[in-house]
Amino acid sequence: MKIIEVINSINYRGGAQTLLDGLVANFKKQNHDVLVISLYGPIDKSFEHLNIICCNKKSRFDFKSARRFRKIVKEFNPDVIHFHLSCLATYFFAFGFKKRNWKLFETIHTLPTVLVSKFEVFLRKIFVKINNYSLIAISSSIKKLIDDSHHKNFPCVFNGIQLPICKYTNNKKYDFIIVAHMSEWKNHKLLFDVVGELKKEGKDLTVLCVGDGELLEQNKQYSQDSGLANLVTFVGAVNDCSLYYNESKIFILTSLFEGNPMTILEAMSFGLPIIAPRVGGIPDVVTDNVNGFVFEVNNRVELKEKMQKLISDNELYDAFSKNNLRDIQKYTIENAALEYIHIFESYINK
Image (cartoon, rainbow, N blue to C red):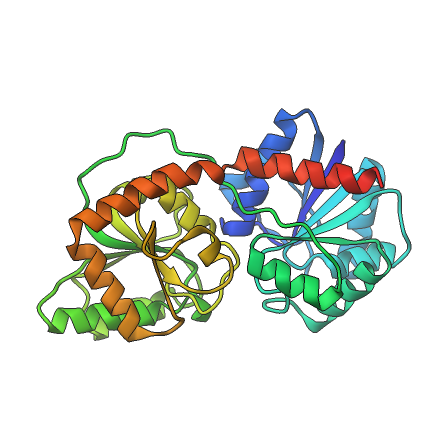
């Protein structure tokens, strides 16, 4: 099978980019011919092994990059084009609505109307309506939203990761680790506020923040102004978080919305119990009081209670850790890649 993987941007290692990287590697292992296209540049160095073709898109409506995209696709002549992160406008400007020989798929990585332009949402509805486009959900909640919105039954494939090959350590430097892009919707300030409250109560809990983004400096300043300079550590963008997962006790997220975070799966693979909000696909992989805790979005009281309980109850901590090391076997990138190929083949053979 000839597959083109298309992503809006691959200039940092986010969840969608990490999934694409793993899928490409496994598709090639299965002897499929794979081409990767990024609409925008630059390309993060950690993805250079993919030999990505960049369309050098300059703006939302860039017809020059669309023509370049059209040329690349026609020369490769794929069986499948698989989109990640708002690529449909470029495809439309390149090929219009007319059906082609290839099948079109889009993985919906987060809420279907979040971080996507109204034009993209409109195009998606048209493409789905004319049976030229299949969506793929990464969580049961996203599947319900897109099923209800388009009155169709779309497939769902949970994210998968490459399981780590390493030795686990008991030398834990940090009580909590959060791996997340520094943006408003990741809601870091909620975590800092709770850590600040606990400090006032005489409980000093250390937090490691991994990630870059537009709010990095603002979050640093906020934590310092909150008196947490000696408790919160920022390390910026990291391509391989293995060392930091190994040095941390508990993985935590405070997001306002999510799809199915790759970072949770990565943390599970290191045996870290999870504390995360009850949003998106998180309840699909985090079962409350089994392998971690979930809490209501922005609920500071509930978050504080969960953090205190897990950090102080060693028996509960060990149980959650063991359950995660067991359950992560279901979420491998190998399994995910096989499911994607099955979906592609089923549509091609229709």
